[in-house]
Structures are given as C-alpha cells and as structure tokens.
Length: 280
Length: 241
Image (cartoon, rainbow over all chains, first blue to last red; front, side):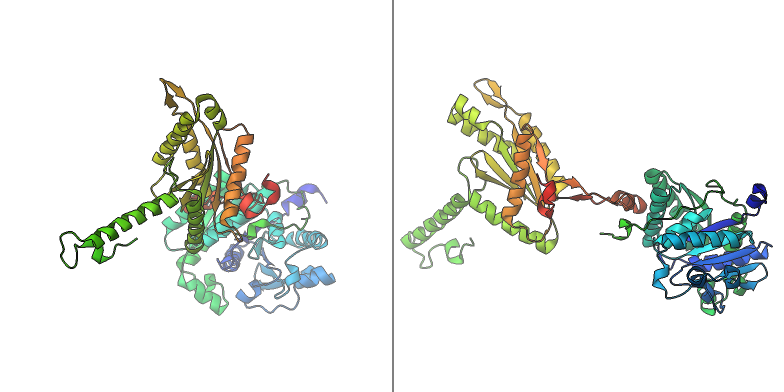
C-alpha cells in the first residue's frame, strides 16, 4: 500500500463542539450529515457523546451495540455501524454510561485506531461531541481535522465556547477553529456574535476563527427534533434547512488534515484537572 | 443628639430671663462639645483611636450587609523622630497638622481620617475596594511628597509610608485583623525604603486555561472585575510576609 493512496483515502473529519449543552450540536450534525450524503458523499456520524448519546434518538434508530462494546469487548466496529440511508451511517455511543466520558490512555489509542480504520470508508466523518470540556471532548476535537465550534448568541454559550477554544488552544495547540452561529434571530446578530468571539480569540489567544456559517432560529427545528426526524426532511424549505445546505457546501470545501501533518496521530491525553470549569 | 422641642422655644412660662432654660441650653452645648472632644484628636482634628475602632467595626458590618467593601489605609510619616529632634516639637506638630490638612483635602467627605497614635494615621474608606484604596494611597503619598512644609523661608520635605487593606466580607475578619493587615503592609513599605505604598493586593493565580475577567469583559463589552486576592485577609499565610 502506498502512502499517497492512503492519504487520498483519508476522509475529512470534523467535530461539532460547543462547551455548553443545548445549543443544537446534535441537530446540526444530523442535518449536515443528511445534506452531505444527499450530495453524494459517503458520511459517517460518530456519536461522540460517549456517556449520553443522542444521535440515535434524533434519527430514531434502534441501537443494539455501541462504541462501548467496541472499546470494552473488542467488538468489530464495522458491525456496530448502523446504516440509516444511502451514503449515511452512524457509529452510535451508549447512554447513561458515566465512565465513558473520561477516556483513559488505552481507550484513547483504541478509539483512535478504530476511528482511523473505519473512517477510510467515508468521505466525511462528523463527530458530535458531548457538552463540557471533559477528556473525551478535548480528545475528539484534537482528533478531528476541523473542530467546528457551535455557539448561540446566549452569553453563557459564548463564554463556554470561548473557554473550550482557550483550552484547545493552550493544551492542544489548536490555532484555528471554524465557528457556526446557531439559533439566530437575525443575520446581523450572527455577524456580531462571530465578530466578538473572533476579536477576543485573536486578542487574547492569537487564535484564528473562521465563520463557517449561521443558522437562524426556526420553530421547524424544534418540531423536527420532537418528531425525531431531521428538519432537512420534514421542512426542506425552512430557513434553517436552507442554512444547513449552505453550511454543508462550505464543509464540502474543507480538506482532510489541513491543520497538521496528516500522518501525525493524536497523542494520548493525560487526565488532568481543568480549572476552567471551576468558575468563581 | 436631637434637641428636644422645649429647648428650641423660649421659656414655656414666658419669663424673659429663665435661668433653668439658660442652664439646660448651656448643658446641651457643653454636651455636644464634650462629645466632639471625646472623638477628636485635638492636634490634627482627625478622629481619635476610640472612634476609629468604633467606625471600622460599623463599616465592616455595613460591608457584610451591603456587600460593598471597606478600604483601610494606614500611614506613618517617615523619619518623624528626626524632624522632632532637628527642628523641635513645635515644627513636629506643624508637620503633623500640615500632612493631615493635605490628606483631608484629597479624600472624600465620607472617608474617615483618624489619628492612630503618634505620627501614625488610619483612613477608613467606606465602599472602597483594594485597587481603589491603593490608588488613593498613592495619590496621598504623592501629594505630601510634592508639598514641603514651609519653615522659616525654606521647604521641609515630608514623606510618608502607606499600607493598604480592604475588607470584602472575608469570614472571620475582625477590625483588628483588618488593621493588622494594613499595618503589616505599612511595615513592608517602611522596609522597602519608605515613601511608598504597599497593598495587600495580589493578582489571582489562575489556571492557564481559565477564562479571565478581562476576556469575559471583552466578550460582553463590560468592565472587567478585578482578579485579585488579599493574601493577608484571605488567609494565604505564606504570601503575607
């Protein structure tokens, strides 16, 4: 096998992450995956919320085996993957398993090996991370070629997104992030939120933020979530759906591993206390 | 002391010259004069030690109730013994009065300037946190250093050293503890060469990834909180040398 072929086969891996929960990561991930798969790309969603999985819920799929079985029992990851449509598959995680949130070194290298192995079958791998800045979140963002930070105009979301960016910049030498502003009441608001975050990240962290896109607040989104069907399917003409198509087009332009040497593996992380969550 | 209505008017029996009313009025004046005397230092006009302790206790209680901090500045004139020895006690007293007058002109009306004893003073600053109290102390230091006392046609240069602390509702802090803390800083200022301000102010040690108040302020376009601790009052003993 020659190295160039191996590189050519490498998919684009993006993580969707936010620090704060409830900003729409999973819904964005699922709908983006649907959009990408419709344009003919082979897409894998990895449910990176290893402790409280949600992707299966939003896609209304029945999960028999999850990432947990792969990591703990050595199950074949290819048997764990659930196909949910043409070109679209899900690697589900487990729900209600607290210990899955903090990956040990052994689990990290196992996960890395299996993600690399299975992702070669796809063009795009979308990793939906958990909320917070736990070890698994940081590791998955480190693993991804492009971390996409999802933020809403809510001040708590902006603070948490910034905190996540700061930890990734300081501890994992990430110096650029894509940003998606979600749940906007106006396009202008999206520009403002992004400009603020960009300015602060540049000034204090010397980190570059790229505005990948914005998604308006749309009542169709909540309705679709409750019906457990992607809003791209239930309301293809909604403003949110149109925004997803634009975002998906931007993601298609991303290249694999542009931020670091493609062959360089993500190093195992040593668990260490993170003071950023202990706000005073 | 609130005057009773009877003292406001003339004699209830409408005598032109009522000896009892005269007596009562004289007693009232005497009483308020004595009250004034009992809380004032006669030389400088500042409040005395007793009033200082009482006020500090009261302001700290106010801090506990309102959440507003109470600042405290301790001041000691530098080389004051030399002034007394070289120029005599009259000039020494003039120097004290001179410094006190200058400082009084540079504090707010709500601030409480007190003579702690000898050439040492304490200024209680209601509603003032450590950074602001430190700024004020620096201003008081500079204004005295820039204003020599006129003595027989020449200027006698006076300087003072300042120690600053502030009470922000720390558990277990007493007026004595807040005074000790400022005194501690004053001793440090003396040891570092005098004519300077030392404050119980230290930047908070942060985790390198913690979001700072400056970053928060930039995100929300607000004023940053001060990220500081007071090692003395916050009980970080090893930092309070």
